[in-house]
Each structure stands twice: as structure tokens, then as C-alpha cells.
Length: 287
Image 1 (cartoon, rainbow, N blue to C red):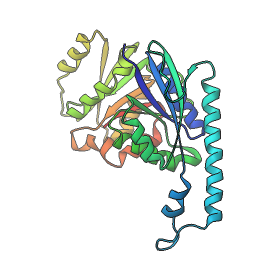
Image 2: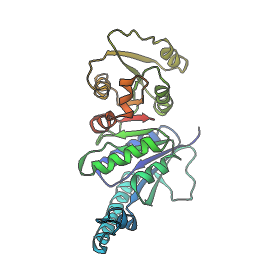
Image 3: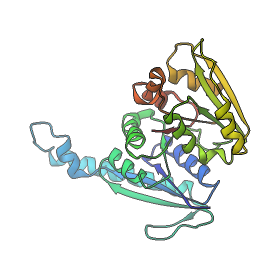
Image 4: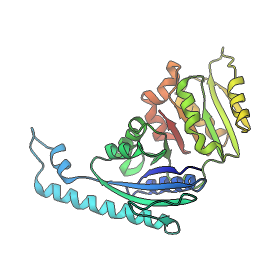
């Protein structure tokens, strides 16, 4: 089996610890390299990007204080990574990962968190980020959205404390669109090992969707699937999907953008933030 490259965002918070645990849990199901990425704020970038006047740099004392704080966050993130991976095979840059098992590696880059996470995500099969919450939620939101919209690969958003058990019961938010088809492709990391798969569909009162094709897809893959139809309550679509996934007992929800104008809000509009803020289970998003 080919090696799966998994990237996880490490900022030293307990939320990022959960993201790391989820990345490791996924990595243990197949030959994988899990890269823990910490992005350290570049002092020169801060000096000019946060200028208080028209092109004036920040005072040197403020930049120096920010630099020291960034170094401390980097140390904290590295220590957290070491603590969670102490019993796993670790390598440094340039070394080859184990082709038959799980290998982990800590990466330190300097620059803007969102830019660096998206750039690294383009050469990984999956990026795992913490669900934005707590004191760092705004920067975590920027990083999560950069990974989702700029990396070109699936992103797994993990709430604090929900990373260790993932992929036993997979829920897939489905509608008959090319965007939803990308979700099926992204969910392959979980579908092969899932004990249970639920396909969730939110439909209008007068809709009678044809579920033959989606049932046949899973039948030909040798996967038992339950198709769950729920009537649209006119609540926000993100809220309905999340609520239904929790009701069926899923431990991960896979979803993408949708063709129906109301469903498209799920990823392409303000509802994206609703999902990122409110999900109580890990959510795999494909865009």
C-alpha cells in the first residue's frame, strides 16, 4: 500500500493536541507519515504587516517581545509533539519514513500560519486542524480556512478531546452533485476500515430522491451502507447535518460543497464558520 502523507497543525494548544491524536489515529490504519507543523511568526513580517501608521514599522521593542513569545510557542508545540509521539518511530527532515508502518516528524517553518499550512497541505493527502476554539480560535480559524480553500486537499477539523477514536462510524453528507462526489473520494481514508457507514441526505418535503446509484456505489465497494433521509426543517443546513450526524452516532462526518443553492452555503458561504465553530465530532471537508 502506498504511503499516506498526513499533515497536522501544531500551535501548542490543547486543541492542537487533539488534532495530532486524530492524525495519529488515521495514520495507524495504513502506512503513513504524520507531519506535525508549527509555523513560527517571522519577526520581520510582523514588523511591517502590523504597522501602526502609513508604512511605519512597529517599534523594535514590540517586535522583540513578539519574537520571544513566538519562540516560546514553538518550544511548547515541539514539546507537545514529542510527548504524544514518544512511542512512535520518528525521523528528521531528509530521512525516509517506514514504508510499512507509521512514522512521525516535526516540522518548523517561519511565516504566516495560513500561507504555510496551505502550502504544506498541497503535498499531503490530508491536513488535520483543530476546531477553532479557546483563546487561539481566530488564528485557528484563519489556518483552517486556508487549509480548506487553498491546499487543494481534504481537511479534517477536530474538536478538543475527540481525536482518539475516529472512523469506526462514518457519516457522509450527500446530494447528487460533483462537489459531493469529491467527498466520497476524500472519505476513502475512512471507508476502508469503517465498521458502519451512514449516508445523510437533507431533502425538501416534496422531494423523493433516487438513492439507487449511491447504494450501488457502496455495494460494489463491498461496504454496507445506511441511507438516512431527513426532511429539511429550514434551520441552517450546517446545523441540520451536524445534528443528524450526532443522532446516528457517527464519530466523523464527511462533507463538501453542494450544488443546491441552499446546500451550497454549507461550505461556500457563512455556514462554513458554523460548521467549524459548532461541530462536536471531527468533520472531514473536501473543497
